[in-house]
Amino acid sequence: MSRARNSSKGPLDYRELLIEARLRDVSRTVLVTGGKGGVGKSLIAATAALLLSRSNNRTGLLDLDLHGPSSCLILGVEDSPVEAEDGLIPPIVGGVKVMSVDLLSRGRPLPLTGRAKEEVVKEVLALTFYGRLDYLLVDLPPGTGDELLTVSRYVRRRGEAIVVTTPTTLSLQVAKRVIQILESMTLKIVGVLENMHAGGGSPSKELAREAGIEFLGAIPYDPSLDGRVGRLRPDELLSTRFAESLREILRQASYHL
Amino acid sequence: MHEFVIARGVVESLREFSLRTGRRVSSFRVLVGELSMLNLEVLGEALGRLVEESEVRGASFTVDVEPAEVGCGSCGHVMSFGEAVSELGEEEKEAIHFLPDLIASFTVCRRCGSHDLRVVSGRGVSVRDVTGTE
Ligand SMILES: Nc1ncnc2c1ncn2[C@@H]1O[C@H](COP(=O)(O)OP(=O)(O)O)[C@@H](O)[C@H]1O
Ligand SMILES: [Mg+2]
Ligand SMILES: [Zn+2]
Image 1: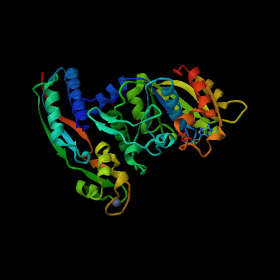
Image 2: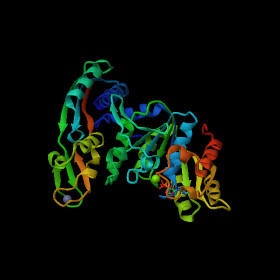
Image 3: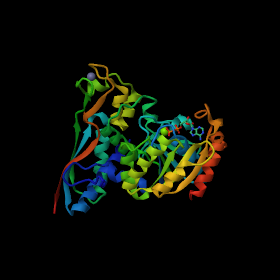
C-alpha cells in the first residue's frame, strides 16, 4: 500500500501534512490491536496510557474504535474537547489527553461506511491538538479495517503495534491474521500480549514463536474488574492486579515505566 | 475556529505541491463542503494572511461552497443540506462541523427513516484547480 500523497492532478488534501506534522510531535505511537472484540484492547490501551502518564510521560489516548468507542467510558471522560486556533484540545483524565469521536457523537451510534470511516480517522488525526507527546496510545477496533489501515499509513515509521489476544483458539487464529497484515504494512510489531490468562501454559507464546515476534507476557483474568470498569477512578484502576501485571509487562518491553 | 488549522493545512499542501513540482502557485480554489459549516470569512482571511507569509505568496484564490448532498443507502433518497440539518440542535451541528460524516448519527432519512446515510458531496474542504508557472 503506498502513501496517499497529494498528487498534482486531483484535488489536494489539506489534512495530509497536518497529520504528518502532528505525528512528528509524538515520540512513540502505540497501536493497540487484536483480532477479536472483547479481548481487552481498550482496557489495555487506557490503562497503559494512565501508567505511562503516572511515570511522567506526556501521554495521549486516541480512541479509533468508531463503532464501539470505549476509552471515554473506561476512563470516565466527561468534558468535551475545546476548539482553539491549534485545533481541538482533548480533555485530560489522570494526566492523559483523551480524544474519541464519542466526545462529539455523545453515545450515538455511528453508521459509517468504509469511505466515511477513513474520512473520520483523517479528520480526527488532522484536527486533534495533542501537542508534544512521549506516547500516543491508539485504541483500535478488532481486526484490520479502515481505522487500522488509515492510521497505519500515517504513523508507519514512528508506529508500533501491540497485538492483544486471549488464550482461546479463535482469538489466537484471528490474531495471526492481524499480525500478517501488520507485517505487510512494515509496521513495527512490539509483540503479542496475552490477556485473561487463566493459569497453565500460554498458547500465545506458540503464536509469537511461529510468527517470529516477541511474546510480551500474560495478564491474568482479574475478577476484581468484573462490573467495575467505567466506575473505577484512574487511581483505583491503577491499583488493580490487572494494571500491576500490565505495568510489569510494559516495563519489560522497554516502555518508560 | 478550526478554520485556522484548515487554512494552515491548505497552505502547507500548496507549499508542498510547489516544492514537489517545482512550479510557482499562481492561483487555487478552496472548495468548502456545506456540511462542514465553516465560517468562510474567517477561513478566507486566515488563508489570505498565511498565503502572504509563505512560499506561495502572491497566489490568488477563491473560496467556494460545495452544496451538500446526503444520500440514503436504504431507499436512495437524496437530501439537501437544509433537509439534512433542519432538525438538529447547536451541539449536533457543532459535531458535524468537525466531522461531517457524523450527520448519519444525528439525522435519519426524511423519506424512510433509515440511519444508513452517506455524504455524497459537500463534506469537507479540498484544494482544487491549482495553477502554477514553471
Ligand atoms: N484481564 C482482565 N480481567 C478481567 N476482565 C477483563 C480483563 N481484560 C479485560 N477485561 C474486561 O473485558 C471486557 C472487554 O474488554 P475491552 O477492553 O472492552 O475489549 P476490546 O477493546 O478488545 O473489545 C471489559 O469489560 C473489560 O473490563
Ligand atoms: Mg475496544
Ligand atoms: Zn431512505
